[in-house]
Length: 147
Image (cartoon, rainbow, N blue to C red; front, top):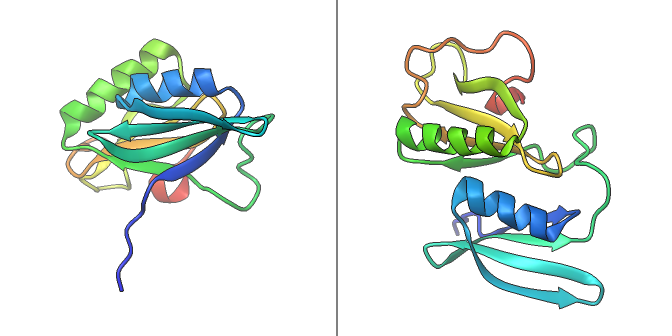
C-alpha cells in the first residue's frame, strides 16, 4: 500500500479573503463553493485537480505553539517560478520571512520563500535548485525543517 497527500483542508476566518490570497499567490481556481450549516467552504483546484478546501469556521490566528500543522510546502519547477510567487507575495503585502529566497540549509541547493497566509498559516514555495549560492538564514524564523 502506498499513500500520497490528497487535498488539504484549512480553517480560515474570512473565506473571501483567503480565496483571493490563494488565487493570487498560487493561481488556484475556485472549483466549487457551498455552505454546511453556518460554515462556508470553497474547493480550490489547479489544472482541474482539487488542492485545498478552505473552511470559514475559525477565529483568531494560526497557533504555532499548539500541536497540529507545522507548515504547508509547495514545490515548483525552478527559481523563476519561486521568484514569480515571491513578487506576488510582496505585492499583496503578505508576511515574508527571511526577506526572500533562502536555501533549506547551509550548502543546500534546494530552497524557496517562506511566508504566511492571511490567518498566519505558514507556507513555503520552493524548487529543488532555487537556492544556488545563497547563504542560509542565521536569524529570524528558520527555513523548512526548523520554521
